[in-house]
Amino acid sequence: MQVARTASRAFADDPVMRWLIPDDDEYEAAWLPMFGNIARRWLATDSLWCTDDVVAMAGWVPPGRPTVELGPEDGVIEYDHPDWRIERFKALSALLTQNTPPEPHWYLNMLATHPDWQRRGLGAALMREVFVAAADAGLPCYLETETEENVAYYRRHGFEVRSEWDVATDDAPGPHMWGMYRPAR
Image (tube, rainbow, N blue to C red; front, top):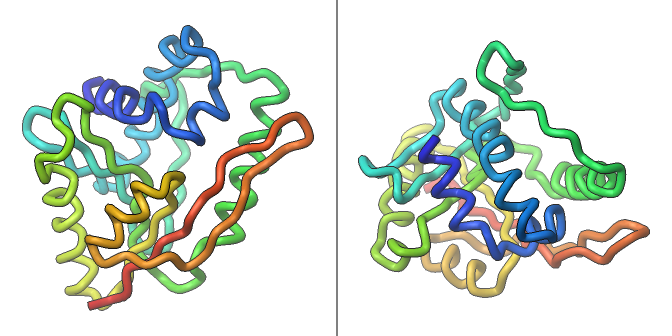
């Protein structure tokens, strides 16, 4: 799946991804099931936007954050995680939930552009698609990010920092994160 390939390349150095999967070889082996499963959920809610050649993608979650249960019959690939990674997923998930705005909003789950195609406006164009839908419905948008560079990027697109937190478990400190909010327009 090309969406998974684009996301894996774009997130190869992402602080959260590398906290969850620090080993390079394992990251290479894990990207297809991990990103493929996430992409299947976006497809199930009709909330995945891509360039025609899939070098850039934006995976959004619609207002209300509908849950989608998918299994092997849907192409979901099972992937066993060691206990320490499960604890990291739980810690991350708890903090994401704690910092999620309570009001209805569009959630930018992932914006990814293949490294060879970055800084050409592709991500901005894909975000604008949902910005229009959000504005028409009078809804804000929300995302989390893990780098100061991304905070600056998203500020240029109307997001402001709403919250900050550090992710950690007993076995390892994790990344610093920012929750960013783009008010309804």
